[in-house]
Length: 201
Image 1 (cartoon, one colour):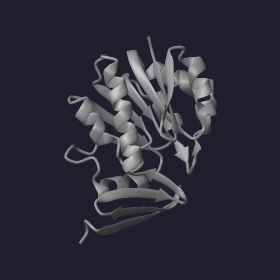
Image 2 (cartoon, helix red, strand yellow):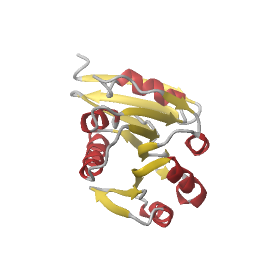
Image 3 (tube, one colour):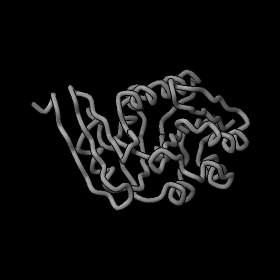
């Protein structure tokens, strides 16, 4: 009766214990008292994909910074059918959880680099049409989202006309530095989450 209840648990040097639970067909991924992936976050990323698609710019190469349970992968493929996705995730245990709960199916699990996105992403050679930034330590966004240097490096990784989407959860102040780096931007709320779309012109 896995459809009714199923649990995947991984011990992580970075996150402590990661617990993924499926109840009546829906997965949630918990780190401490923080929900990393759920039907809610999957809907949030699907909404962000629609907003990016509405810009009318081609999206072929995508960089995801932060994997969580992998709930953003399927809506990315559904909205941008020929896209190639590359992921950076700091926690190898989270990668194992994402592979185990299979939210990415029926698509292939994307190539994933395990390590610190603030170090790996600026060193990448290629450019991307879309960058998703979902970097947290439990409930707190990654501190470098307040830093101009990291954001400027991400801007350089964007192709002309590209879009960066940042999830700041309940911390709207973490979008201020990105608004300085990307003068063309839209900050919005998806229910209780603050997000920003940042455009490279």
